[in-house]
Length: 179
Image (tube, rainbow, N blue to C red; front, top):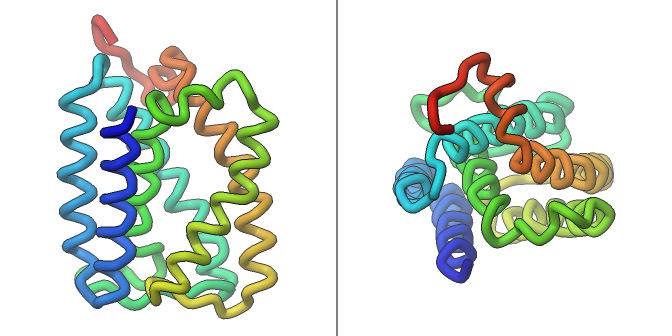
């Protein structure tokens, strides 16, 4: 569990500080390395890959809303469409997903605590990214309200998704033997 926490924190700082110092692809590469390490070490790599990919898609759509509404702004990333959240943000969602079955596993049976922790920790992570100059709040109040309510729902949702191997199979419309 400690390795999982350390890898998540290392990936978070690599992504956020890479973006803050105009080297976003360095954070993306570090996140990919850490996610590959997580998948390699997992007991069921197919399930973890599915969970990570779904969390990244969810995160892309989640972060697209405040970006499209002009509540937050990210620095343009070379070779990346400016209309989308940056790749390092999407990677952060994958890194978060890598904690769901390990260091955050205890929250699966406590949805109200997951709801409250999501409402607090999600916005705090964005605020920390803002403090480190990785993103800009255009409308701080609207963005924080969205992040608070969104993360309050996202954490229990993703924990529930992590608990359901059958749901992950159905969402990807295929299954493999032994997964």
